[in-house]
Image (cartoon, rainbow over all chains, first blue to last red):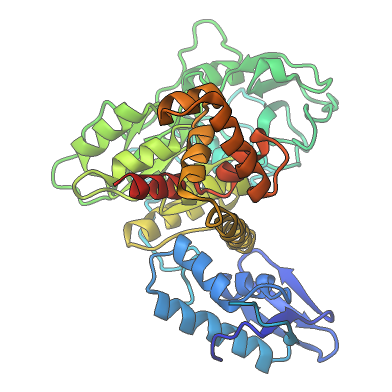
Length: 99
Length: 391
């Protein structure tokens, strides 16, 4: 997925987050499936609110972790793509910001 | 970036079993020991706390002195003696809920006397700044003629002890202002997990001095208003050790402060001593550690900060160089007369500039303007803009 300010990921309403002692799961009641998340994927999913851009998530991650920006972009994009492929997030169209 | 960044390291590491060598038999040191035996002439002792790391440290400390204490978040079935961690038990209100006394012979409270005990009758108070021996005296009732048991195997891992020659255990500096917390956790980290621990009372200069002296792999620090100063000074050291903030309470504000101070990680006591030890190892290996459930909210706050800063910058760029100077001086605490004196203009001219600044920023008062600069984190950037104008 390329960085885009026009399409933003948004959590699906029928998906809930279940936190257990050592693992977190996304449970889709509509699809009847559960997906295990690591901590980073869990945080990215929480930020898929239809208003947050991928590049904003990347910037914040780079503030917390000592990671190359290119690596963070690739990892966050991969997580979002996987969430979308698993139908755990959808996409919303937002107006492109004026430059 | 591997997918585990932000997750506590899951690799195994050597955990020394208490009870090895000449140390006293240790029943396990972990929480949830309900059903423990009565030892000697002591009644069943239960520590009520929702801070597992603290609970494990206290039970471990007591066990090394031959006193069995069960640590629990809620259960006190059959307890003859209850030790109540006031700050971390039922702490949803200013004071903990009243504790029924049925079958309980003695209640000992650890914490701030002024906080109150929520109606629970307390038989003995022990401050968080007390020595471990004072807690033990309170637990045992301080029966005359009976010395407080000394820990088996000696008291290692204190600030007075040098690491043993030839040992390759990780060395940490532990900065914690509360003595009971400091001594119990330091002792447990040493005896249970093999760390060499140099403890300080949290004073920045003392902590930095110890870090220079012992060259720890990690500095574990309690959150404080001096955290930023501590992190900056540690980061300025040659072979600067990373800082892990240990917060008993688990606060998003303190997590944000820790990250913005330059700490490499943040943990709470909720995961117990093992999680703390894992975090220390992860930090020492160059990873960053944030509790998984707190990572999303942390990133959200950082994103919000960045958005506010961007919005404030859009307003700042419409100011003239002179107006930025005026705003910078206003944010520095000067009034119109002070601004006029610095800029060699009349007070009336300074007030005119201030009015224009407020109008362009879209705020209604000087206080709002100062708050805008402060909350958007733009004070430093504004200062650089002013410096560039002057050069």
